[in-house]
Image (tube, rainbow, N blue to C red; front, side):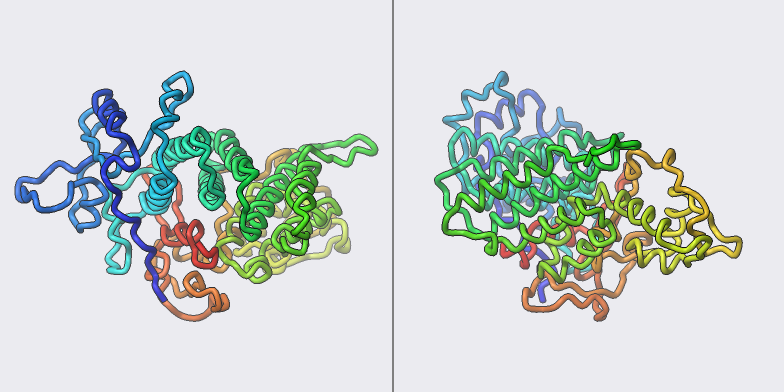
Amino acid sequence: MTTTPPVPPYPAPYSMCSREECQERQRSGEISIFESKWQPSNNNTSNNNKPKSSLSRALAGGPPQKQKPSSRRVVDPHFAMTKYRRSAAGMDSRVENARSLEALECCLSQLEYILCFQQQPPTDSSETPSLLLFPKQTLTGTVSFVEDRIRAIQVDMIVSQRADARLQYRIVKCHILILYLLGNAKKKYEPKFGRQALSAALTNYWDDKEQQHETALDDDILCLMTLQQLCQYILQQHSYDTPAAGDNHHSDALPSILDYYRRNTQQQQQRKLADFPHFQWALHLVELAVMGRPQSLLRQLVECDVKLGRPSFAILCRSCLAPVVNTLRWQALEQYNISYMKGEKVEYQELARLLYFGDPEEAGHFAHVVAGLKRHDDGDKIVFKVGPMTKQQTQPNIDDDEARQDAFVFGAFFSEQNWRTHQPQASRTAWDDDSTPLQPSESTDSVKQHGSASVDQEGIVVPPSLLLYHVLRGHDDKM
């Protein structure tokens, strides 16, 4: 089983950005570190190698260079990518200079690689992609570059009328992953713009009415769109403190979900709802939310690796609903506080199982500190039905903090030791073999599989780079 993703192909010069734009940006100093050349060292003046760009030097195994100010960088024509421009900044000229689909795909492949590997420090493992020697950036800095260049890709597809459903699907996955990683880091990242970019990518997927999409891709997109709308529905539902009589909290989300179904399944006469199993599963989650069954909804998300049969897609699905995981736990806890006997004591371990926490202490903290339920004097137990939950500490956004739901989202691929201490942890993956069942208990070295998590200069935890890359380009997604 291979443990390293393929390194993106070495781009031809000016294939991802025109010569004219490269020259103009060199004059203005608008050059990202990801697009700049390495300065030749004193002991290596050979001209027989490829241009010493950030990427090419890394692939050749050279040492990393100190980051230079943008005004002193030299653009590398192999790795320069067209920068996003608004219409007032020269959009008209983009029609004739729009890149080919092959160039756009090459550009997106580079961006996926940069997004996943730019924050991970180099390791001693020979199986780790050599691109890890590329100078590391903060996650927010990397995302800023990636999102700008993705917008430029979408502009080129729009102005040239070259639609590609598979390319748009990959862009959707990038936006979902970015929103999950930085959605709670509101002091460093504006999630509103990320949600707008994701919404635009989902809409652009359906723009080409003449293109015959693959049913499997349509199924994935409908599923992800439904989960995004379901997330908004749950957030709006939970924002009501004292709803009026007869108010069912329905937002625009649920009508939108039905509209997706009518437009993209019913109108396709040759396809039936049975052809969209992932979309059906997402609609079942909507049903559970409307019926007020948060515990069942959480269980569906936890078990979707097996139900969907695709671990990386299951991570994407949980990422879509990560903003409301604690909201669902809150709702479930309210129901348990009604159903348990008065004064009944429940151990942290059992509470963790009921609320799908990986750590019993986290479950106890959520019930006692966040929800305000009484803790038993003996400790490690919560006493139910002795008082109401303290809504004033958690409403309306109990997920509004910088703590992500990594244990819940990454499921069997999350390792407390890997995330907290950045040390090897025994685990196993099924990324590279679709027919291999997921069995996390088998013993192999996860550093060889995924590496370990890291913390960037801004204090943001970055999950293992190989794990992120497999979420975007895993073999179980048939990419």
